[in-house]
Image 1 (cartoon, one colour):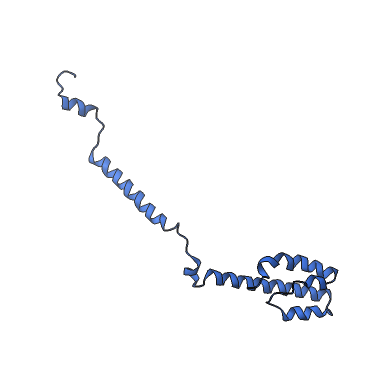
Image 2 (cartoon, rainbow, N blue to C red):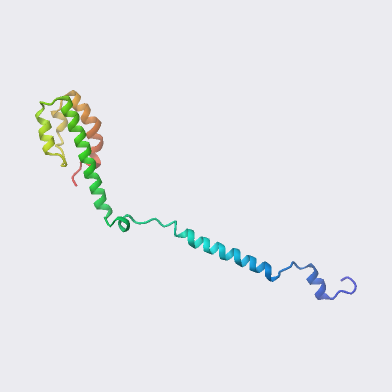
Length: 132
């Protein structure tokens, strides 16, 4: 030890300064981090569809399928009519609008009508045209 220094003076001379100001600054940062975490955590929770709209998810899916089925059937009937207005099958399909069309429908169509069927009805069949 240097001459004239007590043990306490020597150790405090080389010890980092841990004054109260430094701890207050750390406490502020910690509180700010905690407050930010709590506020941001509320943003990460997404609402459940039923709580927002009051409609069950299965009912919503059924409604979407029904609307999609009607839109696709309307488009197909419109295109069938443009192709051949005298086709009696068009009236039968119009009566079945909104319900499942016959599975052997394609066999009763001519060449261009089969193209329409393949383009609009067949791709949508697995999900939209099954029974609800």
